[in-house]
Image (cartoon, rainbow, N blue to C red; front, side, top):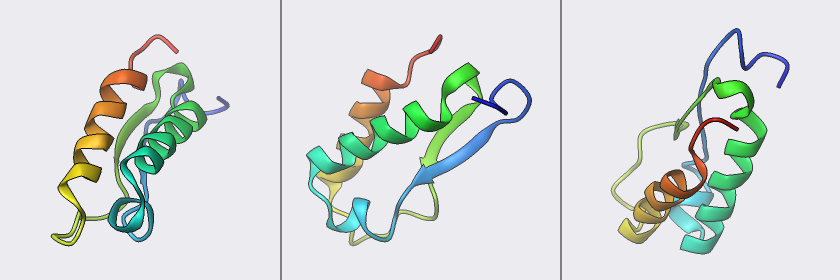
Amino acid sequence: KRFGKNIIFCGGIDTHQILPFGTPAQVRQEVRRVIEALGSGGGYMLASVHTIMNDVPPENVLAMVDAVEEYGRYPR
């Protein structure tokens, strides 16, 4: 909230625990949490914090994309 109108945050989705080991529901919950924390004022571009490795279940990547479609719209 403090910086959203002045700078853009990029990243925020954990590639070490949530994406490889979480459930699709946990991934969706994390996407929503991060969007709510960093998206105020339009200053957030959701992405993984690092490369999404090949051991990440495809259903978790799809859950991330679906959650962005559902929760990642502006204005917030």
